[in-house]
Image 1 (cartoon, rainbow, N blue to C red):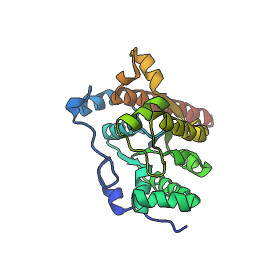
Image 2: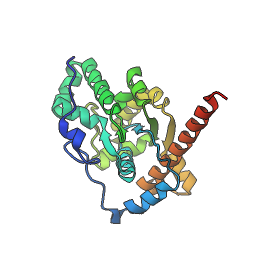
Image 3: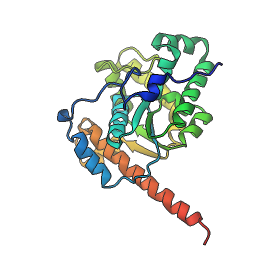
Image 4: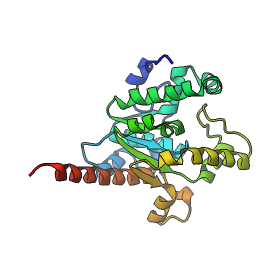
Length: 249
C-alpha cells in the first residue's frame, strides 16, 4: 500500500480544531470548572516533563471530550486517530468502501497515521479500536502514556441510539438499542486484550464510586480529566523511581 502524508493543515491546526471533525467543547460557563481554574488544579500535581498521553477504549463522547479537555488544559494538541484516517483517505464514504474491499490496507493506514502522530510532540491522541488490534500499533502507543478510558457498554449504546453519537466510519453500528449493544459487545471482546496493555485504566464506574456519586451520569468530563492526571502523575513517579534505581552507584 502506498503510504500517505498527513494533510498539512492537521500539523498546523490549533488544539482539537480544524477539518478533522473536532468540535469545540461547550463554553466554560457550561462546565463545573473554567479552563483557567482547571489548569490551576492540574499544576498542583502534574509534572512538567509529561509524556504524550493517548486514550484508548470504545469510541464515546466521554473519551473524545476527555481528550480534548485534557489537551486544552495542558496546552497540547488533540488528534482523534479515526478522524485523521478518515480525512487522509478522503472521507467517511471512502473509508467504508476501503474497509469492505481491503481491510488489511485500511489497518495499514491506521498504523501509518499512528506512526506519524507518535513522531510529533505535545499531543493527546484519541486512539480508535483498530489501534489496539495490532502489535505494531501497541508498540507505537508505548512512545507515550497509554490510558484505557473504560465506559460501560450500555452508556455507549445509549449515546448512539438516543443521542445520535456517530461512531467512526470504519465501524458499522446501527439498529435499535439491543442490536447496537450486541455490536458494541463484539467490538469490545475483539479489542479488550489490546485495551488491557494500557499503562493505566480510568473506569467511569470507579470514578463515580470514588467521588460518591449516586449515578454514572453525574460524572463530569472534568472529573475524568482530574482522575486521568492523577494516574499520569503516579506513572511518572514510578518511572522516575525506576530510572533512579537503574543508575549505577
